[in-house]
Image (cartoon, rainbow, N blue to C red; front, side, top):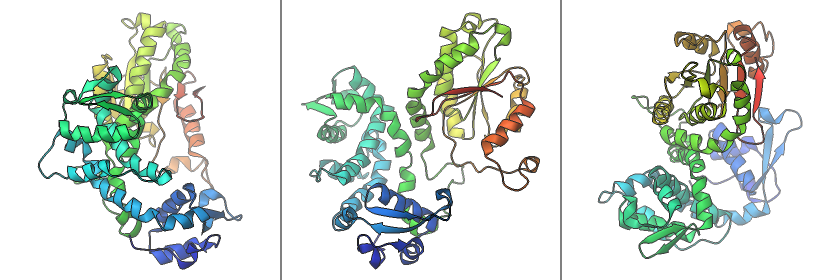
Length: 426
């Protein structure tokens, strides 16, 4: 960017106040903190935490360059500049390879994929990742990885432009993920593992539109439009994000099978009438749960008489569309996919009532995703619970839930990370 850094930051070990960095770079403070945090994670900066305030309240007051950061200053910026120039083309990689047009910009991808290997270090991995991520997502969504998992394939079997897909395959071969023999390709053991987790790349790759706008977010107008006039999100590829989330979360779905089996193996009169997933994404979790109930439980033997109502709820239109396709393709009968906001449980209650699901009797609520970008509204009806300091939103939700839901309402949570699935009665 040519913005530079405060002169004092060029001396390893010398602390520079965040305010001074913000003034010197003229960067937007919120996004600047994120950028500095990334440099800390890379080991190029170290941060000083104030003892007077909790970390959650922006207590990081100063930063210092590390010896590794000093060494990186001389070589890293120019290497990342090349990667930054690729971002607009990485966004269009699938179009370039599967819907090629003359002069469409694939030359930039070809040059990047064919360039000499960089030194084997962290930056080398970052540079490779910028193309490896979009390439694996593209191949997964187009079904090419499924073909490769079944065995060696010919380039013409990819339904892509043979010459262009070869450049992509050559690049993946350099990473050790593919073996190429003439016009035939097969996965290596490392490539087979990368193929199995390809959906996990989808969430990261879905934010390439935002990364393409980093200059404006850091140093320009951070209030740029987030959606188009037609309602399309501009800083994230939501359909890819939903696809990636659904695939990545499948690893954790089986963790709740025993909990769900316990609920739906109880006497039929004590079982929930349905399953409602708030933040259902592409519907993969609901598809899995219906299959688990159908195949592993007493309820599954009585679905003709006691059908299981499946309800997917999501704030995002692209997610709802994907969920409908998933559940319809899986043959789940009588499912419903509706708009909903996790901040508005009362509206969800009303919507479920309209669907004929009486939450005062029985319902199982599930979650398999992390809630982000949702501002907690402290409504007037909640102020009696928090006259001075708002309590944690989860506590408010729990108390409100107990007021509206019967004691036979179950909540099942499945989240990635160290947290194990939990079931509780509201």
